[in-house]
Length: 80
Figure 1 (cartoon, helix red, strand yellow):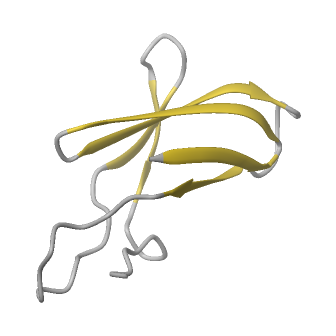
Figure 2: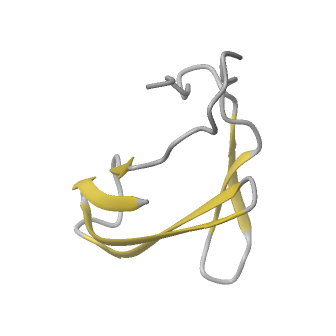
């Protein structure tokens, strides 16, 4: 798995444990606004079953204070 900053993200680290992906924005270019990043080289196990949307997407600050919970309306998984 590889991750890279796209918009206002200078440095990002990603890790995976089981079914959980953790993304840490380690350095941002702005303190407000939109932030985006990409995660590549994630593969689903071989299957003919369609993947579902991401669930339980949360944003926490450095003190683990829950700042945001996102609903899976735009974030989807595309099998390749």
